[in-house]
Image (tube, rainbow, N blue to C red; front, top):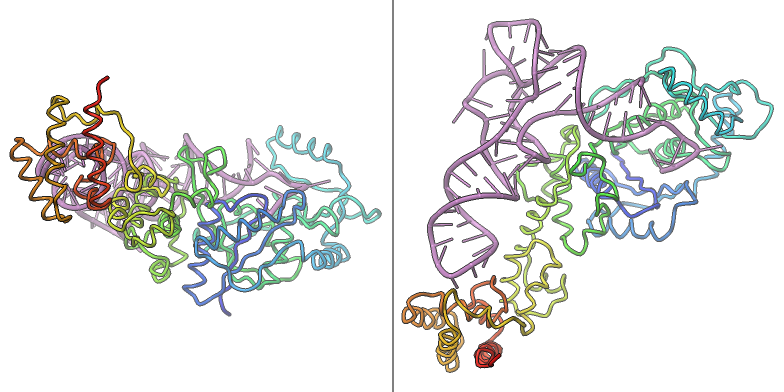
Length: 449
RNA sequence: GGCCCCAUCGUCUAAUGGUUAGGACAGCGGCUUUUCAAGCCGUCAACAGGGGUUCGACUCCCCUUGGGGCUGCCA
């Protein structure tokens, strides 16, 4: 039997990074085993599901390079199947209508809590079939049955069936609830391995009971650890950027997937492609404990990838119109794509206070003379690194150090106190622009104020 | 409260009964140096606690503690 896995996000929001990681591991597992990786949209909650979110999920997956195989499945399109299965369960007495009000259920739960009993609904409508109204629940036997399953990542996990109560499976014949829809669809799609977040562990025994009631084969389960915020709670909106799309403007998809992959699994090296991940991946070796989403590490990984970008790739990604030489100066210093704007002096003339031109204790006059000397050297120069290194080196010797020559030059060319070597900037922006900026610096120093 | 999952440096982790407990990110210091960045070198830093098992426990078992998840007519 060939491997078939899926991710099943609900279109009630953007693709969460945790779902992104889950998609990655599902994808890796499928690729590793020559299986298929599918996408199912869980839109049983019609109130909150939207087409826009659905589209954004496709986009995020595509951006990460985790395109699903085959047709996309939607739970909203399976209502008919849910209905007939529900009718069958009802007819067999494996499911029943519960007519208790929400107030009654709440009171029952509160009462159980105060008595330190497990919270669950033991429904006394289980055996009455008079009215077909209310919600549909699965009839769970109150014996000492232990439900167990072997989690590929965590090993054996057990639950006492009696603690589950008669849990809900549908609001009505046409409104299946999560656990029921999941089981129906996973069975219908012939999913072999259900690989999902650890927050679903407690849903698993319920789903196993549904599989049994329906007489369907039970898939293998693997529960992934959660991605945590820095306070070690489940990463959620209040922690800031949690949607995959939030990372689009600053991070390369290869960097994000590399990071997401490494945070729950130990690969042989820090930086690796998805293809390399496939060859090393072993589902049973995925970590058990949740990992904090460390942006600093993500930034470092991103920087590694940015540095490997070719000039044309970088320009394509950022839309910046700069020389190839300039790209090199940027990518070596960049952690986040959008920060490229800090290097605007490489494509447009900088503004800066003239005091910035002053090197340490040099006077305005000294700096002006230094710049004029540089200008005199640069104007007739045949543009090239070697000549510049030699010439400016010579001027530095005369000045008794590089600082007096290079510092004003840096500021004249970049408008900043921190920048690449002025020689590199000069080479990147060209002779004409360089002369213009140095001349402007000299003029600024001439101005009285 | 109940059920379940988890537990090594600040963070991500290696170690599968015998190691000076290793690496990466972050931090700090240094080298280089015209300032950044990069690079190189160095440094700080952890086995949650208590019981067992064993000649020997980070590794196996139990308890405690801590953290997390679930506890919906959401998914």
